[in-house]
Length: 289
Image 1 (cartoon, rainbow, N blue to C red):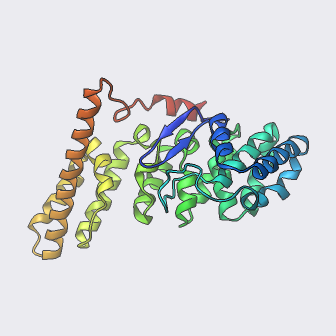
Image 2: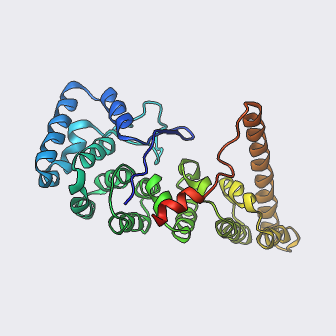
Image 3: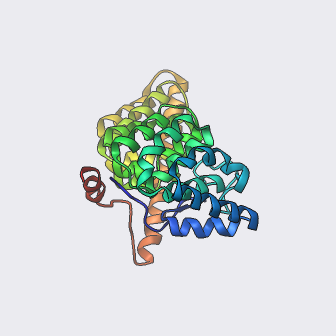
């Protein structure tokens, strides 16, 4: 079982609550008196009668609202928590040991917002991997950007294997879920993921299409030589669209490298540099526990 939430994480343009106490405080600050009263009563009810969650869960959005949890969240940010997702998380926490028997049904019968609430809650709950991981995998099979983003939280990065996460990251790039919002990505990046993203970049170049700039920091972290050489070889192709795409891609790669160097220099100047090469052993240990 896994409870992965510990503290807060600051993302790029969004804040991720990672323990239910800070989540509760943030939610209380954004709700009016009637919404707070409703949620308190709902939590008490599911503590007494876990089966009551089936009727309460769909009503959360109407009761507490669907606005962003963090007032500074950017419009359209698929990684941003919402009031209803936070409230649903607290309701699932209130179930205690009974959550394992309810969560799959809530996901299966819920609409997109309810499913997002279940997925975001996983990091706050003690559920067996046999219960939680299939929910993540199901969301990753969809093309719903909000479901995909919600599924790739702390729970997924602690419990899913490398192959699943690599495919998930590639899907994010493909459908347009920003990688910057995946808080556990740096710790779980692998050479295989870097090579996969480099092959994707080459496919884009060969088709004369642009390459998303956000792939380059992950590619260059491990520098898959064969895949990078294949991209560079496009510079000598007879097709002008492939040469142009290669030039643009490599220029984007250089720009991302300059940004990374600037960021690292700022971190070193402040006395601490963390995250870029974090030890992946804790995540593996959690998966194997």
